[in-house]
Image (cartoon, rainbow, N blue to C red; front, side):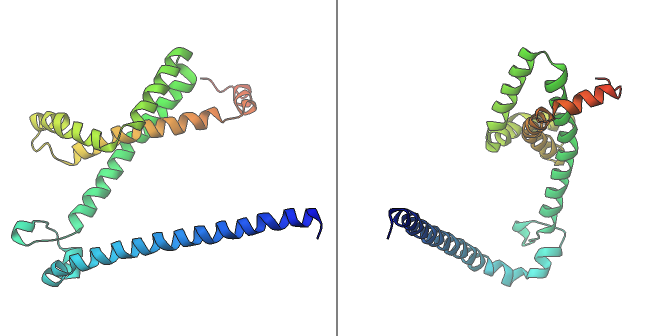
Length: 190
């Protein structure tokens, strides 16, 4: 065997070892996920026996103190909060990126980007606690009850605006200069 054949066979053994190691780790992770799912199913069986699966999915009320369990109100409110937050945050984030990339002076744009990066790094739990302590009482003074869809929409929008703005800013930075020059040649103004 030549020395070049020995060199090519060595990485193959290491690659096989790595492949089987990764497969083993993936199998362990999959088993853990199956155990978690099994535990959740076993622990939820008493309520499904008492209420039933179809009423749990289609009834309109959630009040555990009265024995009313339904997933529908939570699913509908979650979808409404997400839709409202995206409708509010997407235009603000994109306009923010446009301002930062094309209109703001360079020092202001740099500070603004850093602020967005800091805001995107704040955990959602902190936003939620701030909303509970500050935003809920504020909205409660304007229109009771403060724990409403409006509060959820505002908090989620505040949480996702920095991410949308940073992604849009990075996308705008990736536009080739020829495209911008072509747009100016076609009389596109700022």
